[in-house]
Image: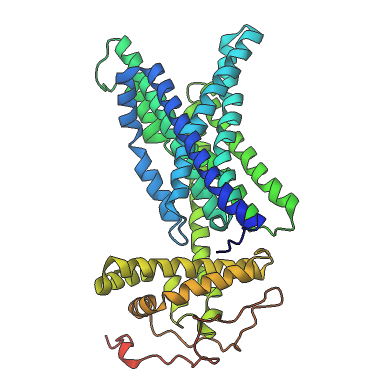
Length: 446
């Protein structure tokens, strides 16, 4: 028996990648144990449990909001779990250690503890905390490059990382507030307690504060992912600019208490709320732009016979996607619904890949990646196509026939196309025009 040795690149992929994942997971677990011990030591067992229960309340809401933004081309859950774990464990541990060390050093050097605390909160903390959170976005950007393709991906990874960081920080603040109330003889969560005030400020009024800061870093990485690979300086400067803006906004928020008794409300109402509304609008607009990209880029594959003529519309409508999955689940159970969801994900990735390729941003792997995605789509067509056709007919009038393209089609001067491989691909070299079935035409008599 002859054993063929792995090539250097294959050996690197097979041997080192699992080691990196295992090492990173171990480091996150150790940092989680350390941060758990530090927070419990500072707050006490009872304060820790109270803070843990109260700090958990905004986490499902924020996580669900970021997951909703990522519904068009959802990334794997493991990326979100990593981002949240990094924020709650590694970034929080770095922030606690670095902030404490820097504040003590400044207090010793200046012999002015009050000024050291102010400087630590307004200068040191924003730099340390935003840098620690940005590390998670950087790691996903470098090692999950196929799953990090635009602004929405950067916003989601950054926002989930900041949600994890805010969770640990809230446990610490709420636990300390509860300890202060106990020392003052206040029991429970009375309205005049420090715990109630801390809960109102951090959980009710500003649960989005840390995600808002770090999202700016994520937008920088998202723009860098969209930039052409040859523009290396721009791809480096955009994340740095986003990180700088995140630090500046964080510093402004922390310094609001220095601006007088109404400084917090002035910064909150005059800056934080408008900034939050603007970034929310930007992310929702980007999400709608992704849907338009799907409808624009996929018709060429429909004309070539890889997908049905109705699918560009169905895949660019979140309602039609849901109807297709429900229809498949009704006929074939959860397994069929999962196949349709996978088909939708691969088709979406194909549309985004072609969009980047037409603008010179796909890189040398365009041909192989396109071939891979087309193969995955073709293998799932038997289950997915009827469901998507049903969804398209249920949500729109008859879809007109696509523009005719030669086969194999010519995607453009910057792209090359690999025609069908053995085992999958359109069965005929020509594509018959699509004729709507009158039986499915909408009733407009009323």
